[in-house]
Image (cartoon, rainbow, N blue to C red; front, side):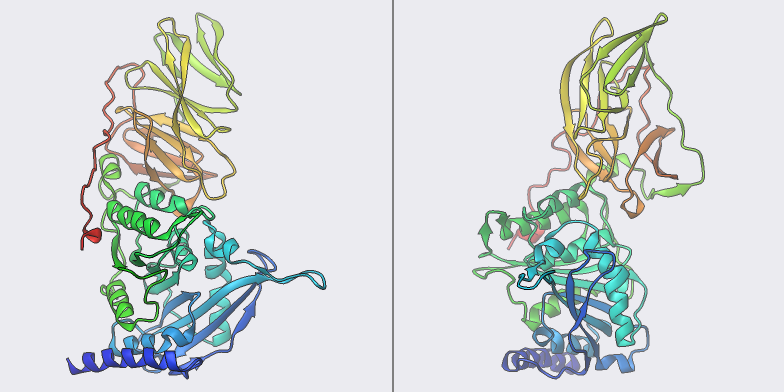
Length: 490
């Protein structure tokens, strides 16, 4: 008990020392700032980092953890981290401090360009891949340090745009980062981060343990309100089944209490409470639970992708080519729809009167009514698709329809699920966020291909049968409503 009390007091003293001394002497070895340029990612940008090997590493009995810290100075938090390592709140580890990149001019008299938005506000894989594949290995090699290879032992944090970047890293490189502290993350309309709270809600949860803070006096600017963005993300994390905590500070501004040792103790105490056990998601959101068989993961199979049967109905067989749809019957072929960009797939509703259309050149899944004579009419934009961060193909490249009238669409984000009344309510990303190119459902098994690789997983709902009629029964609007959020109630 006394040990914990003294350690806590030491944390407070560490903060006072940080405030009083601009460059305190941290216990252990703190490198000078090192400049680094990448040969693959965002070429030409100049990154600046420092590596700290805390004193506690000398007595550690296992390989060190990794602490990746964005946009925060060693003098602000180094001694606080050291105290928590000494006490055992967090495991001993190597700490890397990274500052925003700049782009040097290519001619005399040119100005340096600040590249903060290009690397920490941008949603996508480039920055996470740079960290994992280049900068961290370079920093560890230069420092002569090793770390535990387990992603459960890797932590990343940042504030403001750095908070959004920390989440970005844990999301796209979940094979490397699993524990995240986000201080006033800017999930705002800067460079795609406004989509994050909705992707959190609709995608399967990933094993990420999260602590998030914000003030009530966050900036409200042309790209959005940081406060409401944080609240939206917090609500999404709870809805999707993440293990997380959200703390709000009344009458405080952006990035509240970044140097407060008590906040760091609460955050790190929660994030590492289950150490050395692995990080797990508490469970998928309700729409995914209703679709996917319990505990059915993606599995890669060494098999030929199952071929689909032609779409044959009582009117004949519907086929497509380019931007047109045809009805083949009695030895003839009639054009029944046109004007699409590039049709990739078609499917029929469970009650046999709507035709669903995937157009890879358009963002929508379309629907048309099958008229009493078998011709098509009443074109509707059935559902807009979510787009990958750097999408090369806007629309779906394949689709299939389940017996409950849910459309499954193959997209660069993975498999997107669309309920019968035209809303995308779930996304099933492929392992490694590979793009889904083809899909089909056979005997409740969902098969998806990406390049030459084929994956499958078990569903609770079978594929639709064009020879039988069934009333649509996909979940309604209210399925999964929650009226109170535990993390928002004082």
